[in-house]
Amino acid sequence: MRAVLTRVTSARVTVDGATVGEIECPETGGILALVGVGREDAPDAWKTVARKIAELRILGGERSVEEVGAPVLLVSQFTLMGRTAKGRRPSWSDAAPADVAAPVIDDIARELRSRGIDVSEGRFGAHMQVSSVNDGPFTVIVEA
Image (cartoon, rainbow, N blue to C red; front, side):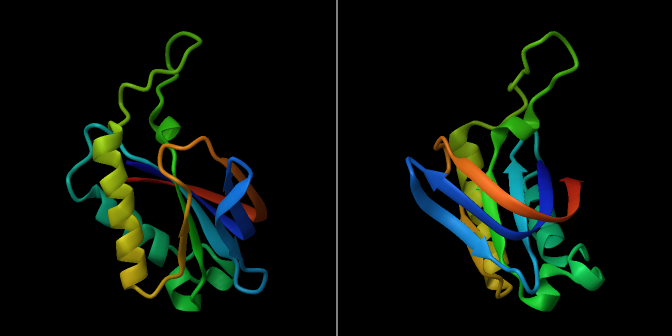
């Protein structure tokens, strides 16, 4: 499993011109979390990713989402699992199939919400437009 976490002051996901997920957080900052689920992920890898989203001290003042009550925009992105070592066309064979990946994304969202975190989401499997105002910029990659 791989996640790209970006500190943002706002982020939005639209599908077919309609906003499906959005966070506005100019004061505290928030996290845009792009998450790719792998075919070979450990069954509990999602727990590590959820914990990192909640607890990494990557917001202003070296604080975490959980500490400041910052929002998270969670977006599934299978392309994070792409391999590009050979040729000119990425290989997606490491990405988990949709019937495996969708429940994992749901588990991450549910875990974050159980911690009291405001979570907005993209739409799994949809062609999405993601926009964000990066803060810093500050971006980290989490692998579990």
